[in-house]
Length: 328
Ligand code: NAI
Picture 1: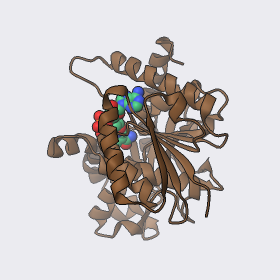
Picture 2: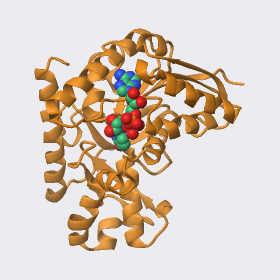
Picture 3: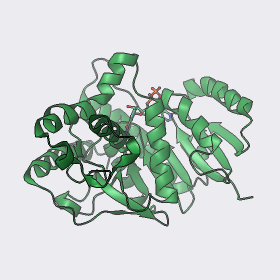
Picture 4: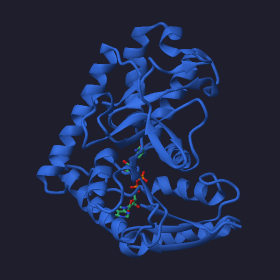
């Protein structure tokens, strides 16, 4: 059998991980032939709760789970890791300003970036789910100068999946008919899910739906505000669907995207589509042999251009804010 892949997960006693860890250990991430070693990071006060989660992992007797290591020191937990899923982050509490939030998370992702730099395996891939995901990824990336920048991604796959589900429902087709979805920009309410390149059963989705008012007034806000709608309905933020998206992003990054399709990944911009270099923004991407590439040559009309520019402007603003806080 294969040697276990070492998978680090942070925020391991939190809501998302209560779903995520079990998906990883059962083989959803790397398939039925690949054992995994889980290396779980939490803050000290949450270690006891994490021990309870590990008891439940034990009680699943997962054949693919070779071992579990837990701790509160990223330098120890990130030792030799091949994959890192950074889920833990500081939530916005009452009275907290945006700059306080950026600063609190900045401290977390500065330390974790440095620890990955010093301890992770040479082939490490790092996916940031904890919010503000794109900017947290940028902070981690900039604090890990020895790890190639393109090994840092942020999660916009949940937004992608939400957009697929909405458009499939509108067209009355199974989700499997919807391909070539792209979410551009930031994982925030400014994100732009683009139906002008999406296909439904191989036909252009925007043409097939032929309802610009629905796209602008229903589809976009529904996808952009879906996180808030889940909180409103469930009383806490999306967790199982966020875990699913985290698994799918990392799985596709390691094992490759489906032939003839692409997925949305937030990756360091190389200037494609006029997106400023130096930020981590969502693009249509394909993956072969464990390396992503941004899909090139899509035509962007004026409507899409304005939406992409607005979300990119927000990312540039976040980047400038963390720069002036001295975090990068
Ligand atoms: P949660 O609050 O249930 O769990 C977060 C966990 O992170 C807590 O157990 C906390 O102790 C831990 N943590 C905090 N600081 C840490 C540190 N320095 N090192 C290790 N662990 C640390 O939150 P939940 O629901 O699991 O969400 C986690 C993050 O994911 C949040 O930032 C949330 O906003 C974000 N999120 C992102 C989505 C996306 O699509 N990118 C979707 C849904 C949530």
